[in-house]
Image (cartoon, rainbow, N blue to C red):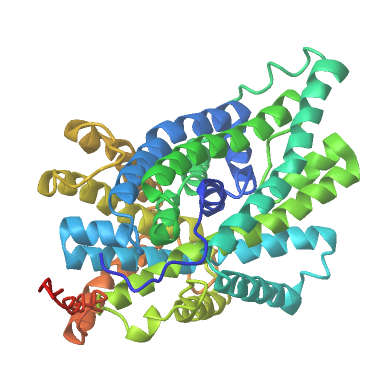
Length: 473
């Protein structure tokens, strides 16, 4: 794909790309509390062990191949458009951007949730909303400094985020081995309270393992993407799983209780193991998670309008970039939309996010297959097996997406007694997805010609040197 993105002074290297990918997907153990609260330690850890194999790894392999073969700004939008045509490319981008409205509303809320653990009054009422807006503004400015800056700072946030959990893990094992030896090792295996509780645990785990493709949209700002994308994807897959499972395992063997464990309860668990200092550090880590995830995802999502504007599907003003290579107009417009979405009281954000994201992910697996068939000679520095293997890669993720659709069929947008209590979350998400059809028609009707490739100036003919006379005197 053509692009007017000028090379940034610096590019994302492997470690910053890995750290940014980690925040796009995970942000640490925060958010997995409802898994163990609904399924218990044994089932919860089992779910977190199985999903990387059937959900994360196939997705990482697919992204590793496509990002290294087609390292274009816009990532998955470009892959789907190239493999399936402009209509499906537009739908892919629409599904991702509409999902971002619900996805991005969660992370400032996580920041405020943990900030309230320091002082409930600080995060109450209008102050909480003001802090959410502040997170959006901070990350907007941060991203204007360019993708390399976001990636490099993500490395530091990654270390600060996980340091309290390293202490938590050590204290949990010490308590199990020294304080109460052989007392708690049989406790982790417990049955979930009900089938619906187990289903909720699976859906929350899926949400905590999604977002791998988001790293692909900054491909033109990555150093040696052919080598670094596969390494970052596979490495992040392993590290995300480890940072989910080990804290739960430490909590289990230390004898802490799982029933009722829910979002925000890592603070109580840390206080039980390490006292108020460790609890305060875990709370600070929760604030880092909210900022780090939002910041990395701003970098990802804002490249989609840029790529679509280059193709004439959005106003051309969105292609403007600053001297650091950041699409500053797209960053400002998207940040304003996410700030407005913070006021929308959706209570089924995860279900809606899963449905929209899952639909876009299926299109990416289809693009992988169709590109293998239609462009067999496309250079693929990293190849996820033969054609049969590529076809099988999408089976597990697609099955889990279908399951999430089935499991959310009875969910409503609002709590009983509210105006949204009768609105189906599944129908609402489907309506948003289908809105992409008329929007594509409108975009193509008013479509401007794509931004042309930068012309290579012809070589200026050099005058021939004057002939040297060899006449004798």
